Length: 232
Image (spheres, one colour):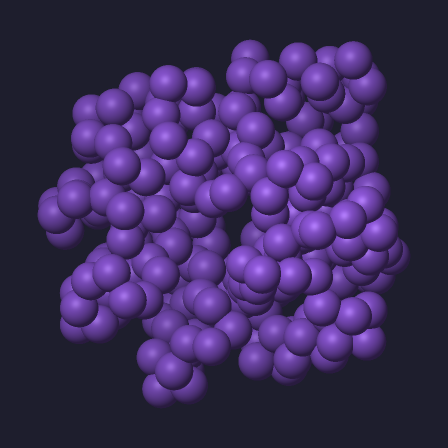
């Protein structure tokens, strides 16, 4: 499945795109939405990720907006592995009262760590309560792609993203190797991460592999099987 990551666009533009996709990430730290708009957008689509990275806006706003997304119907909330434990615990308590699930993500924009280190990071994410662990690392050589994709040989739900031009192959191959989804940007707008491919191009690639015939389970959707790209 392709998850379209949205940032740096208007509320109306986001609504128009969400009408055409099966899954999306709302980068709230890159969007100038108010609480009313957050409530409306997360209650209008059943499969959205709420992400609000720290550093760009006040922490109070970050907490308020994530809480609003969860109570409004977000399917997932994505927190960085380095997130303050107090906020993490508050989010986990909020999730208990909703149908939301937790993604804990790790990012390294300089390199891909060793296999042992990556496995330690994944184990830490699940110990902290993640339903999905996301690993996004900069790939300097093809072996980095192989190391990331090898993480998918696991019974737990793991998403891997290779950052940079060399890492592009992981964004294409990951769902074919067991990742529940991969991230892409919408044509005509800015990518939210270095090395993303557009939803439109990725859809065409997957059709060549008959990806729509591959059935994948997502945490939080145990009774619903997705069939890859249903809209293009």
